Image (cartoon, rainbow, N blue to C red; front, side, top):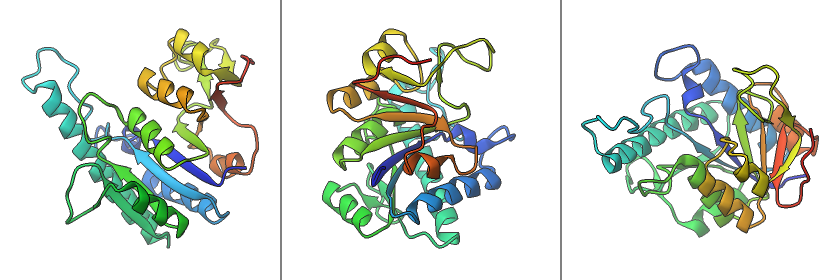
Length: 240
């Protein structure tokens, strides 16, 4: 169904039940799920957040200015990228860690054509350091990189099984959408991805599928064409 995908993963979820840092079991679960679709022949790129290490500056009283905080968050994504790279290679998956901020001792600089060539050679490409610019989230970075590499779809792995009208963890009566178009997702203020990411995908007709990454085998099912989670594109009428 999809030959080239960009997988967006939560860094915060790497904490598991810890207060910060990385839970090795979740890290290995991510790696095994990625390996399962790579073995099908899918070309896989990954963007992972850094919320388990640093969530950025949201407090107006913080002594850290916004731009500095955003760069700190970018560095956190590089740490998570290194961890995921090690986890993937421990189970026999070839990878390349690519950073939008130059740090040649640990990651390749981002060069679009080189990244695409890595994908064509069957390597999992891990994009880190966001876009390399402050004020942009890793959601925006995922949308940007997915469009640059001509991915077929963005797969956003979350802890719930799709997009809901409200947070289902807070309101158990929240309505799940099977399909929704970008315009409605933006109008309804659904905070699955930020507005910049939604708009970039909308303008380039790049669909997003939001699904539960923690259910083993879900990633493989989606790549094989099974309907799971919620699909966001330019054509869907809202389905509940």
